[in-house]
Length: 212
Image (tube, rainbow, N blue to C red; front, side, top):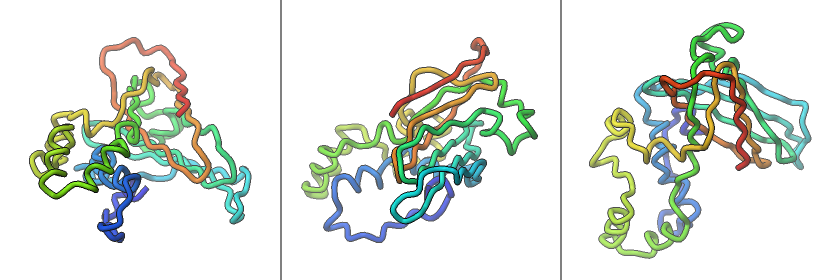
């Protein structure tokens, strides 16, 4: 959510005791690219559902957030802060609500490919090798696996080139012509997707559903 809201990405933890799982979260280039996106607009909440099971803290909320990205892409965030895993969905009319009232936004009739922004994050075993290695050896490992280097290629340039390391993992299927995307979100978790417009394809209504 910090990346989607364009908040400063600051690490307040001790790097000497960083866990592999934490590294896979903090060094995810697809998520950092969202934060560094040149459009510079944060996501906005388009739905808040309070009629869900409470967790042990008494919290019961499901959110859907959406916002624009460079090149006409769109960010969609499903946030589950309730007491159970939930199926969460959003129609294109909802996702592009801020671009036109009640489904009138032109994007609603377009066809969109869907990318899971967590799908290609670093494997935990690789992250452990990096944390256990010397600085020189860690750099070698990153070069060998072709990990995104924002010093060599800034995020703005990488997005212009549509570098696949910044787009996430492409999910099979599309959503189009007023369709709906849906996914299962674990309790106290968030799922984040990049929608990229598909040109020159048949625009029949497709209902996309991905179980993660």
